[in-house]
Length: 208
Ligand SMILES: C[S@@+](CC[C@H](N)C(=O)[O-])C[C@H]1O[C@@H](n2cnc3c(N)ncnc32)[C@H](O)[C@@H]1O
Image (cartoon, rainbow, N blue to C red):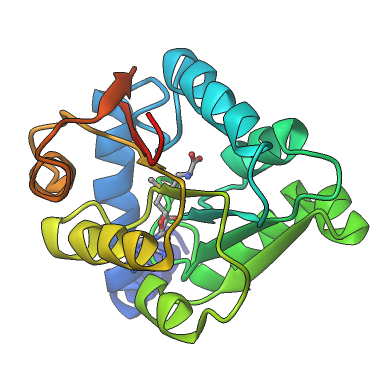
């Protein structure tokens, strides 16, 4: 009986081996980083800085765009400090989360977290790859773009270039100074005059 149960467990583990590997690696990350970084979101210093930037973005027309929704926690923070009627567009392809949730369940979870904002029309969730979203974007020039999706050099470089080409007045992102990411290199190359830093949030403002 016990052996049969063990055998069935093993078969299931083999069937779902890719997901099991992902769950183990994400669990290791959580065990080694039992803080906001481990769960992939902003810590208190990062949030305080982003709130300052969002408040400044209320002076500009256009929506606020977040690339990299994760669980929608920062999306809710942004929406809470945006101007009345200023929409927030958040973009995610649900390729990663720290709990190893499969993409469809990840999306379901996010829609639950954001249900009030989505129902009110304050937030729009775009389920898309960053590159596809940027390619297809035909909306007004955003007041602020917050970059927090793929943290490797090329994608961050391309996201910054997109926002600059559009003329976005406040461009910012997460995880500046984290050595294993390509964020710092992409930001430093794009803004050789330097950027402002608060926590690990970097920002560039057109009129700073
Ligand atoms: C670090 S988390 C975002 C954290 C979130 N901004 C917060 O503050 O709570 C990164 C998110 O970006 C998404 N992501 C990664 N690469 C992406 C891509 N190329 N296009 C769209 N989303 C992507 C992942 O699915 C993940 O949900």
